[in-house]
Image 1: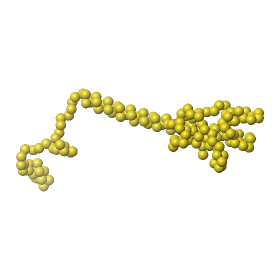
Image 2: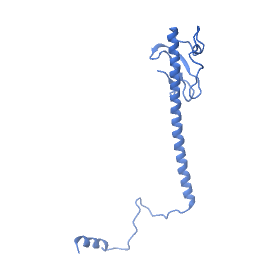
Image 3: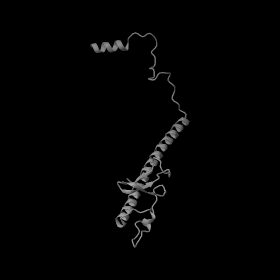
Image 4: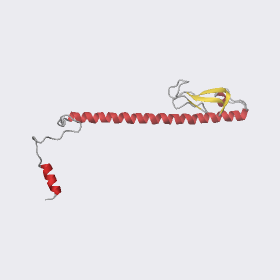
Length: 157
């Protein structure tokens, strides 16, 4: 008999101080029998489905808001382009968006109609005294909440 076999035999047949106990669970406590009631299985399935549904709707809402912001940025870029074309033609900034729809003289309109942002709110046209990178004006969307001056406003830079 080899040394290895003797060690295994001694370990397996070593002195016992009582009946062999079942292994203790890792986290302590007595083992409970598995619940075989189908109600618990259905309940777990319903909770899992609810959690999955909440995750999916939150991610869809986030991506929808992101797309609306991108669409609003594109509309602001179109309005900025129309204002800059007006300034190029008349050597002055328009006083309001109405002058882009009905320009003076015999010019065609710079915009077919006044667009709204992705949330259905009107854009605001503001003249500024200091020269901004886009000129002496600002075009502002009030964002998802529709209130001016909040942190979710979108404007041209």
